Amino acid sequence: MPLNKEELIAEIEEHIRKFGGSGEWCVGTAKDSRGPFFRRHLAADLGDGLAYREAFTTNAAEAVVAQLVNGRGLELDHAAVPEAGRIVFVHRKTGQVR
Image (tube, rainbow, N blue to C red; front, side, top):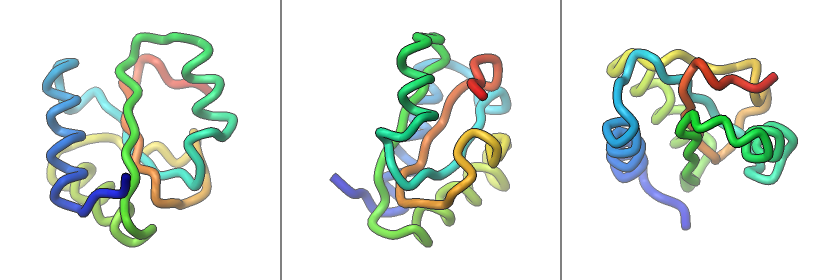
């Protein structure tokens, strides 16, 4: 179910608090949560706290990412899923899958 910007940020921040730390996380957007990045990530069972939520629009997803990067210190992950989309994802840096 798509969420608005404030709901997305709140849910992602709660997820990060649950797993601990903010500066050690990566954030990005994707078009499809069933794409190769997500399949590899889940299959590897990295224990890195991968989470994702859907925004109403690509612009809303990009605004969430910008706020998490600029306001919370998360690292932008362009390489994992290079195409912008409505899915906002976060994961710990140590568990990056390429």
